[in-house]
Image 1 (spheres, rainbow, N blue to C red):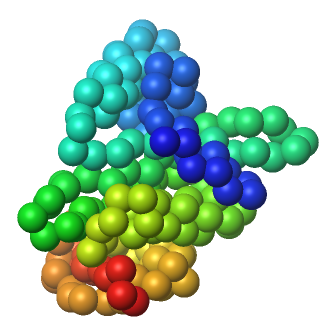
Image 2: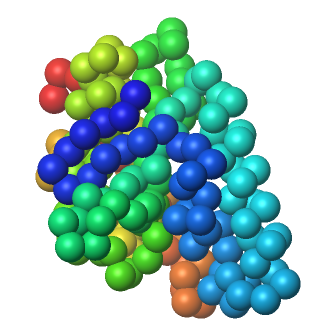
Image 3: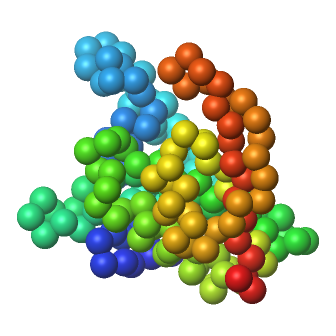
Length: 173
């Protein structure tokens, strides 16, 4: 379903969101020239795959700025459904720094959390976040997620190893 907030709409991912999601599927130099066609095809395939899966929910995050009109600013996904244990994983990606700090991530996280524990009736939602992303960690903590573990030196960022944090939230929290 479409999830409605004050600043964003979470719309089920569809073909009309492809152009807005290109930044998540391509490097900046791939968005111009002959590589742009390949980037668009990667984004199109991602949307088609997302729409065909019954075990996950993929949304385009559409900002509802009065001055700018609606525009895609990212995606949010509930995935890895475990029906037996009533759990799923959550991830969110915003298209870039130009949309950070506007509350889109916070509102999206709250909307997905409420959907997961409300209509879906899940017991648990978990996520992974880079320890080098304090803004995202704050968003998740404000939504009620708690630190459950740290996996050391999982990814490389600017030539250095970075830990990944495991966070979770229970319906009872």
